[in-house]
Length: 233
Image (tube, rainbow, N blue to C red):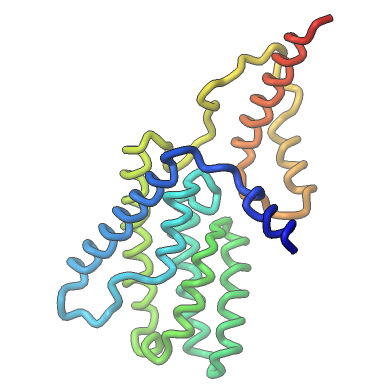
């Protein structure tokens, strides 16, 4: 058991010094700005919640791992809105809270996967819509617009501004490493179709895009060529 506990942190890449502070600062600014703007839009007399709890999970993805396919704008906007709509629909039609909760989360995962907008906080949006009944039933699909869509749009805008201010690309695009190695041989032996085939054959969804995988593969091949060339003959 102790060995297992010691190995748990090693499954994640070590965070670069200072990166955790920038991530936390970005999330702080993003959530605070989202709440403030939502409050100004809704007005002081509105009975709607200013912030949805799942936005905290969205903030983790947007500011701590913005390169993840799960953090792309379409994933955030589509995943949260679609899941909330599914949750509202099931809350209106299924009287059993336990059954409604299971159906909402399961249906949300299926719909997000089919529309390629998988976003883990979307499952929380669907579940929140069910657990918030009877308030959800009273508001109906207005719950999807405010606060879910409003929160999601504002949080994505905050992520674009904060991540770019920190020198990171968002929406993310594949790029070379900070200290790239020039390839000693052509790196075009594998095509995009090859990478897609390998990812599909893996049998599980990996939290990395094909383009990022290509860039990392090319960098690793280049480093291997450098080591091979530096070895004495």
